[in-house]
Structures are given as structure tokens and as C-alpha cells.
Image (tube, rainbow, N blue to C red; front, top):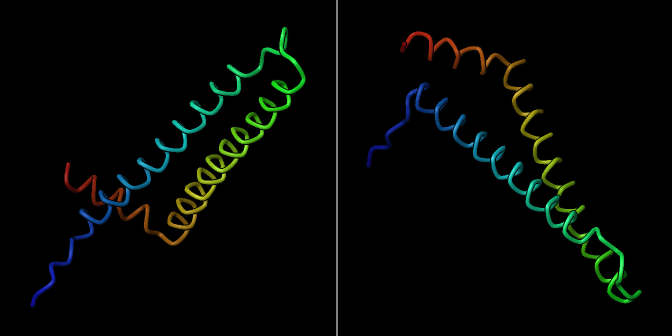
Length: 99
């Protein structure tokens, strides 16, 4: 049984796609959850029970936003580590060589 090892350019492209996907998912989560918070924001004409329930929902949406931002921070940290270790610069060199 032989295993096919992807070349560095393919590994770089796969990593870029994964990072872009994580960024897009986090950004989408932030936008959707923020829109949900805005929809729940008006308080006029609501009784205390409804306001308390919606306040809890807002807290849940806020938690989702914080998790998405933490994921973006992890992506940023990963990119910084890769850059420091020289993995990012080599992938840029490979892309320059291909073009």
C-alpha cells in the first residue's frame, strides 16, 4: 500500500482553504448573532417576563460571538506562529514560483 504525500504547494493551498473557512464561519457567526441581538433589543411594550427571557437570549448570542472571536484569535495566533517558524514565507515563495 502506497500513500501519496501532497507536495508543499498542495499542503499550503489546503491550509489556506482551512484558514479561510474558519475565518468565514466565525465572521458569519458574528454577523448572525449580532443581528439576533439587535432584533431582541427593543424593550418598549414588553412585560418583565418577556424582557428577562430575551435578556437571557441576548447573553447566549453574546457568548456565541465571544467564541467566534476567540476562534479568530486562534487563527491569528496560528498564522503568527507559522510566520515566525518560516512556514508562511515558504508558502509565499512557492506561490511566486508557480506564477
